[in-house]
Image 1 (cartoon, rainbow, N blue to C red):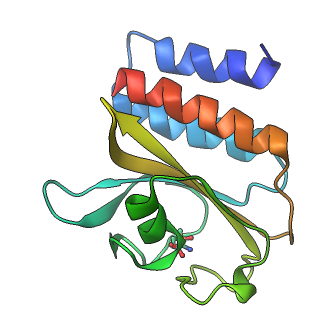
Image 2 (cartoon, rainbow, N blue to C red):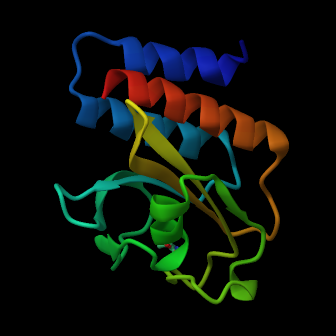
Length: 149
Ligand code: SME
């Protein structure tokens, strides 16, 4: 297992912290360790509404606290149930801008008992920065989060 996965695991396994605290630490670790992760946060289904609500994050404050299903990259992942890698956000029509500095985005869904309950969202100030390794690591992370949530 890679060093970053080991560190993420130890955050998620920590018995003393709430889920909220763990997710905040996950954001901090990813933000610190991967230079081109410039906004890292979680969105979760807002009760029984077909919308996402912002959870723990690290990065500039965003106007997008609530995102209706289908809107933007995040809202599309809420309905597609699939990882969405966007190498250039300006090439995307259905995109909600958070910051003029953001050039690329990756969103990975989180499943609990087969249901899409939320996602991790990462913005980058670099064009096309995300590697297959990043995608694999984030999908692994979201599976681990699905187990503790
Ligand atoms: N860009 C996202 C909105 C959330 S912010 O990036 C934090 C989207 O298009 O869904």
